Image 1 (spheres, rainbow, N blue to C red):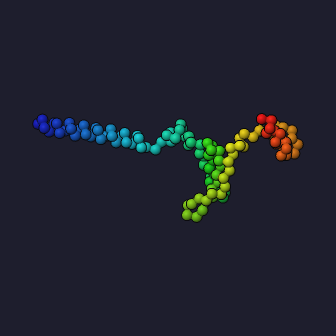
Image 2: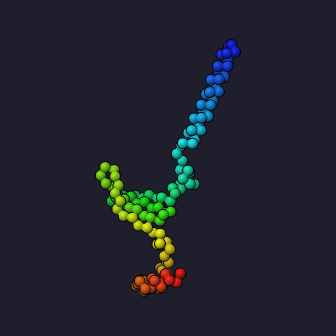
Image 3: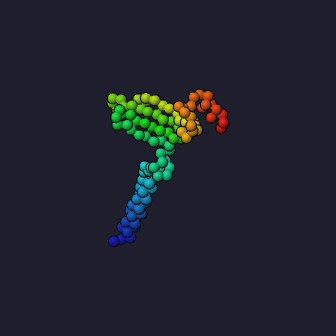
Length: 116
């Protein structure tokens, strides 16, 4: 084998190695990974559940503290059924251990709130 042929093989081998490195870099940079949104199965505070009985989709956003309910429509579409914020629900005081008789009325609740 002459020197020119050897040099051609060396150049082709180096080009092939560069191509493999570039392809590996591209795949590692553009591959989908669940860990990119956070650690493990973190989904930035979004949780989705289905209800099989009436084909509803429940979406819970734990960062914005919203619950959204969608219903299935024909053609694979979804329609919004309802939205509720539970932002202030988590701030409410647990009254389950208090002796309140048949429940709290408005004035009792206002007094509990103003104690804070």
